[in-house]
Length: 189
Length: 279
Image (tube, rainbow over all chains, first blue to last red; front, side, top):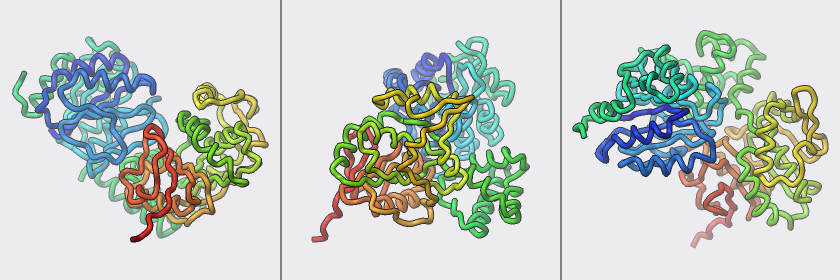
């Protein structure tokens, strides 16, 4: 696995903190996160995740190369995409599934770049963003991990992904970080 | 071969057709977002593939307008990214106030939201009467909509919030008329705006500008095209003139960075500095 894309919405901040806490400082894949949030809450989100994570966490910037072992967050009100030469680009095109940034947009572009080296994770959320992107990830040979809707704070987003894309792994939140560690070739903590 | 790889071939041919048939060059657009737009265009026009788009672009004379409209800068908001307007009001307009006549170029104007926002800002600073805003886009359809200045009322709450955060001095409703489900910007705001066709990819320098606004356009360009456009802006600005780009854009990856000085670390407003003398 070279990269991991994560989509989350309602309830996502707590879920992301828990997920990122389970990745150690030796985790090498790039982690790229879309969490639906307002402009006001974004600075807080970055610092919360920074406190929860052994890896460096920052806002993804246009034209910046995607580094291994780094956690990136999509900035509010912009779509985040990955270009073939593995740098980020941003867009202010129409909202997708009523949201911008959209996990669909990130997942689809990352799927094209990393193909079977990509793992996508869909967490709690109250809309259906990410389902189409997740299907594209699987269609291009990447793996999809979906949080069990039964234990997600908001079940719609993981449930929509299951309906449209199925999943390679359906797990409770607590099981996702250990699986990512394993897929990245890290010994279990 | 996977569908997505076949689509990449189709898009390369589509770009070639646009260039050879109509003279539009999209070859230096950032590929990921461009692909998304082209696939969206095909879907919106109920075409099964990008190849069908290419066929229509080549053989159907009037079709190009719909294509250019969908591939141009997306719509914006009144006072989008309001903190930028605060910076313009506090740091840039006082500097421009000393000029007897002020030229402003708003590049990539889409449906005109930014041009009208700028007109309001200038009015509230008492500078609009001696200002001229050139609002340009490469889409004639977008320019026609910009000229009308009509926006859906459902956007009004967002516009009002932006205007408040931008430090607006009046009521936004004073600058437009709401009727049915639309709001129309008042004619007096249009008095000093000239809407004109200009393509940043292929056209040249634009006048002796004191301020250039080009926000959330450069994000769609690859590095070489961004450098071309920034060079164009540099050469269009008077010495000491200002360039304002989007809050997520920067000059740090660009060859022209040395010709500009950043006004404040928080905001993407730059001042053109004198070229360095050759020793």
